[in-house]
Image (cartoon, rainbow, N blue to C red; front, side, top):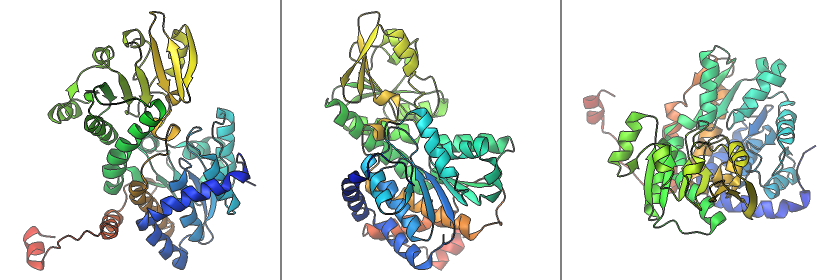
Length: 411
């Protein structure tokens, strides 16, 4: 039995799912193939991904391919209750509620894992953690895992280095058709969509500080520049810092940037990026946001402790009055702003990301018992297939190497 807010919300969720289906032609074609071939027949899939319309469409694809789906979200503020209701009304098992407590969130994770999954699709590593800590008896039965995001890949690599990863784990996030487009263009657009719809403020003419210049940070900085902001990048990696400089951005430490920034966006995957030592430096009205997976990049607990008072300035915006008389604003409790304050990445972007997910999960099912435990890359053939099929949906044709060219290149 599903754990959702209200089944009566299902019609609204169905409208959202229908819209993304229309705009995800690659996934639609893969789903049609899966419906014929049933690659997941008899298999149980535990899935923890931000539960909004694109994810719901992925879940229906996998269910149509024969999978018994057990679904939850990967963040308490990214679940859309109407989408969860639509999935439940369609007969899938869903355990996810917007705004749930940490205890309720863990309970949803546990109810999904209680199925004893054959394949795990994770976003951030919470299913993997739950398996190891609370359901170790199911670990031997897991064929493999697909990880969606950078944070989850970091956690998997830590386990792999320690020799504690008991099955193959495909790093979907590292596929070219994922990080080059999802992390850069998807995050770049969806972060500013979330910030702008929540604040209703202009970006042009403001000083924007982007912490982290990985693929997600590149996208956030690029879109901020396109919106007319003056962009500052903070980094700990000297190579990425040089890259940001040559891309035309100012680069400095967070302590130097703190008094300048009007809007801050942390995109590092690390903890303690904006902390108590930075709060007194912030200008009056500074806006703090996070686009990393966990709400640890802006130290929200330290901010609440340091502030003299705080209040709800607007839905999803908390104002904090500091001892120096200034007020700073934190969006979405410091959780990932593009999903906690928006609808996440555009459907056309997730069309590629979820195609990678679906084909990677099929690869695990097709190669059960043949793969070595540990972290593994998405097979290059899957990456290239997704790219070719996506180009076809866009009406784009490209050249092919002649045999003479292949001989010349040695391929």
